Amino acid sequence: MNTVVKIVILFIFSQVLNAQESVSYDIIVNVKNIDNNKGKVFVGLFNSEDTFLTKKFKGENSTIQNQSCVVTFKNIPAGTYAISLFHDENENNKMDINFLGIPREDYGCSNNATGFMGPPKWKDAKFELTTKTITQTITQTITL
Image 1 (spheres, rainbow, N blue to C red):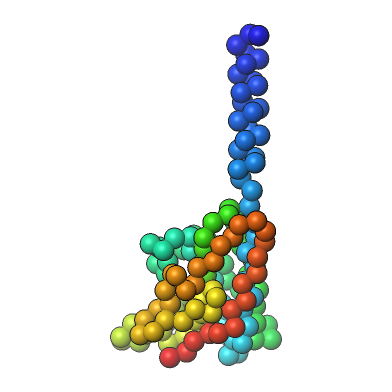
Image 2 (cartoon, rainbow, N blue to C red):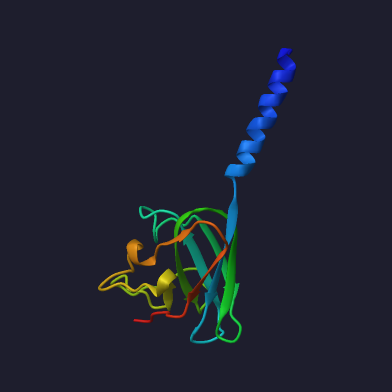
């Protein structure tokens, strides 16, 4: 067999392997019990404990209708993730905080995780995306 044919076969084989490894799913985020329909909801998807609440893996925002919204993260590889969101009621594209760093706008996390004397922890908010599209329903938004 000549060298060119071997290279073509190896290339095709490697593409088939890559296609099998790149299976991905969707994460659907249903946010309910929002205080009102003003502004929008910013939703961050995090893929590591080290970057949780500081550097999102993916981010989306959504308008609010009937005090709820839905955000879908598409083509997400299997893995461990957590979601954090906030209601940007005044539409300034950031979470407003007071002088102590405490949020002044409603927020929530996957698994409806809450923090005690601080933000929710990764271990409470994380979930596994393994073999199918999943839905996270966040019904608890927190206002301090």
